Length: 239
Image (cartoon, rainbow, N blue to C red; front, top):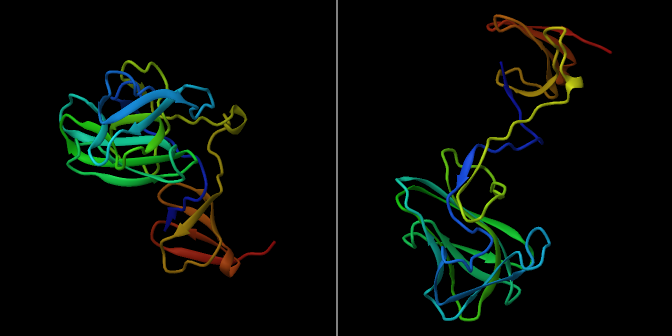
């Protein structure tokens, strides 16, 4: 009768591959530029001088920096870290399909992560567009990727060789050895949300057995309960 109730905890990321090259150094030839200049003179997320790129618009309107990738149709994820350089706020746009669809954002003086997703894109063109002459932003870890399941939050940057695509394995979280017992089945207390009608506050599973048997506490009514997959039975509980 229960479904897991997620509150605070770890966010794990699926395996993924960055398909864009030079995500920190946009002065490289892999990044084409139209009415935009790029200089690797900015302090990056790692607080290292000259580790990421400042891009500056040299005209109004059609100013782009982009990278083309040859790839079969797939869902695309494009995420960048950016902050305003030329003013308190600087508007810019992102696209993963060469500008067929644009998504507008505003950079501020603090580093922020911006992300877009576009489904079923063949041969993606990952693009950044500045709108006004003289606009400038710092960018770091400019990453185009394929995805199967769209992440709920922007994923972490993929570190590694910049001149080649880089893959990241799925996150695996293993608890300390002291939390693992060799004695056999364990009793686990889990905060949960009931799916039955009798759903008072502060319920917690005490133990789970075979054939759907669950023992639980019902804090709202100060009761203990048992559920066998079909029926629920309650009894008064006290401490």
